[in-house]
Every structure is written in C-alpha cells, then in structure tokens.
Amino acid sequence: MKHQYVGDISDFEKYAILRSLAAASGLGLSICWMLTPDDSSTDGRRLTYLDDPRRYRDRDRDVFDGLTTLVRSGERSVHAIESLSLLPDATYFTDELRDHAQERDRYFSSFHAQLTPHRLVFFDPDNGLAPASQKVGRSRSSKYLFPEELVRTYAAGHSVIAFHHWGRYQRAPFLEQTIAVLETATGARSAFAIHGARVAYFVVPQPTDAEPLHAAAASLVARWPSPSKLQLHLM
Image (cartoon, rainbow, N blue to C red):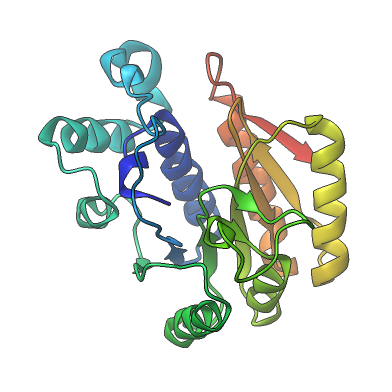
C-alpha cells in the first residue's frame, strides 16, 4: 500500500469488501498496510468515480462519502483513512516495509505481537501474493506478501484476506491455482476470491468463519454491478 493509492476506485472497493466481511463474521479487523514509499507513477489516479455518486454511492454510502471528503481535502494517506473510522473495531499496523529480509522478519513479528485472538486480518501489499520468482529480501520484495506469511497468520487462528493486483496471465486458471495452493498450505477447505477488473482479494477463512464470510461475499457481489463489477470465485 502507498499513500497515493488512497481514494482510488480500487480503494473504494477494498473498504466496501472489508466492511461487508467484518460485519458478517462479527470479527474485529486487523489491517497490515505493508506500507511502502510513494513513487512517481500514475497509480492511484482513478478518481473520476467520485464525480458519479448516482452510479457508485449506493454500493457503500459511508465509504463513498468518506473518500469523497478525504480526496477533496487533499489528505490522501492511510492515516487519514484510519481517522475516518470507516472500519469499525479495526486496528492498524502502519510501519513501513522495506526490501530487507531480517527487517521483514522483525516487521511481521511486530505485527503478530499486537494481534489479539481470532481476528480478520487483511494484508495490503502493493502488488499482491509473491510469484515463485520473487524472493524475500530482493529488490521490490516489499511489494509482495509471501505465502509463508499468510500461513503463519492463519496458523495463529485468524481468518486472512490478501490483496492481489492482476498480472498478465489468464485469470480463471490463476484463481483456481492460487486458491488450491492456499488451501494446501494452510489446511483450509473453504478459501475463495472476490475479484474485479483490476484486483482480487483472496479470503482464507477459519472453519468457524467460512459460512458467514461466503454469504457476505455473495451478497456484496450481487449488489455491485457494472462498471467495475465484482465477482465471486469459489472452488
């Protein structure tokens, strides 16, 4: 996550998804921003949806109104998001993540030290789940969540959500393969994905959380029509 992404249409989708899943499961949210420095790219500039409240606002009015106010104020940062209180019963880990293996280990140890039992944990890496070609500590590794980090969190008794930005590959096979890998690695049997045109969210529920999370996801995508339609992918 970068501050420059705040308020973008994918950011709007993200908070709507997290609010729906947290409300349905009754779990408190723990947000690991995986914050990295802003850059000179054009990422985070898809803001025109805020000029079309008739089309977008009913999807989640609190999020739409909050992000409209935030973007117009010029205060686009994760700290501003936290102050809006869009995510009830949420805690945030705002340390910056860097491309250094030992620092990364300390980073996730610090994050886990603040977690209370049985949370809905959201990881927000810039790019998403790490491909096999990426290694911890290498250049740009801070942009990814590695499978062992997700597994560690699930093994501690939390349900996990991970952000993933689409790459240049066939999406349906990628979803199938990734869900299968996550289920094998964690022992979960009910992982699924919510995805749209640009990003996907992989959800790995604890057994007690699977039914309400599935139901919330189905309800959310049903009320999220085109453009930027959300879809649900189950195994």
